[in-house]
Length: 114
Image (cartoon, rainbow, N blue to C red):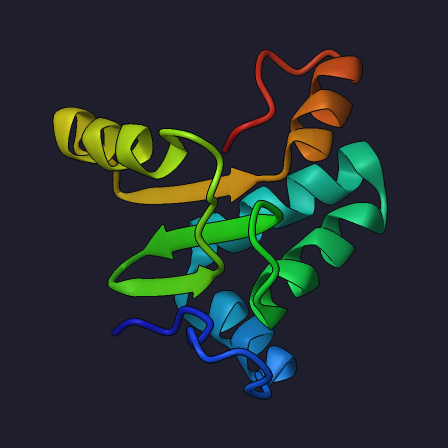
């Protein structure tokens, strides 16, 4: 089920429904969000909501057939992530804005990605 933000500009997105989907159907993604919020505070939740509303390069997650957030449009990021998922058999993927990765690294995390 692809629940990613629609590609049509100006289309309303039910952010709360997507948050509930994450909580109910994407347990590893939800855990990653909670961990990120512990490291950087409410900004983590803001990044999730921005990604769910359609803003690129904030938040994107794939788990158990669900896709939420907005794909990253940074050079080669999507292609690299797709290759890594196939190469290493990822069960889920959570992509964070560079600011989130920097915040996680500043708190002593090995890397900001979950």
